[in-house]
Amino acid sequence: MSARRICSQLLDLIFPPRCQLCRSLSRDLLCETCRRGVLFIGQRHCACCGGPLRDSPPESLPGGLCPDCRERRWISGARSVGLHATSLRDAVIAYKFRGRRRLAGVFAQMLADLTCAEARGPGLPLDRCAAIIPVPLHPRRRAWRGFDQAEAICHGLAKPLGLPVWTDVLVRVRDTTPQVSVPGNMRRTNVSGAFETRKQWRVAGGSFILVDDVMTTGATLDECARVLKYAGAAAVYALTVTRAVPSWHPHLQTLPHLRAGGAVDA
Ligand SMILES: [Zn+2]
Ligand SMILES: [Zn+2]
Image (cartoon, rainbow, N blue to C red; front, side):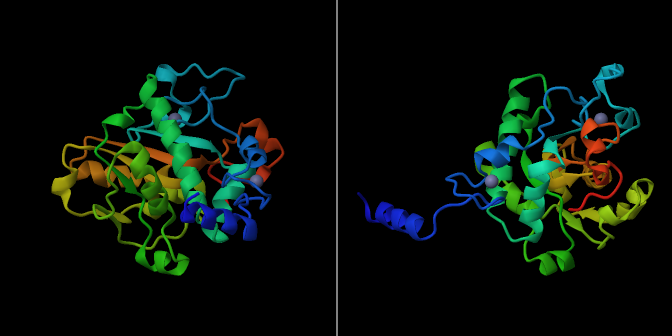
């Protein structure tokens, strides 16, 4: 047995590995019970934004698009792992506000699995993207939080996707009010002009994956996609760990504070 392995087993004895969410003993960073609590979006979703489509009455919209995507979006397509509810919501909050930064690796793996599934099926052509770009925090907010939650997830995604992470082409130039505190219909205005591109020559003609932790109305992702497309990007796709629960969703009946366009606490 190697010295490194002995060390690692000794450390496991002193500090047994625990679930990063519920703290129960677990080899995985997110234990089996917490994983089972995730409300995955599944197959029945909008072809563009990836939001869940309602079953009853069935939404048979042109091109399989949700009502929001009938209006023009800048984002070329988006996908999320699950709804901003139950254990995945708790994990995002623990990650951002309770210092459980190792969850970045769990989220990155979930997004990598999602990307592979898309590439295998008739989904978004994420396998043809040139780089991963995090939705940037304003430097002041980053300093306050001590880390950039989207960037850390991107670094975990880089290896499984075999793509570089570009942190210098999209910058936040205005420290906006957090979208969670802004009414749904004001969110586009709130982020308007908040982002700028740098080194446009790197962006021109390429397709990119934007990454953020939570998607609420999608206004932030859309604004990022808008400036990247103005800089010449051919396509901008988005991946987020969670997305707000739509107002019609049955899960909302038990958790009324999780309404899309309303406040999500992350
Ligand atoms: Zn757990
Ligand atoms: Zn949609």
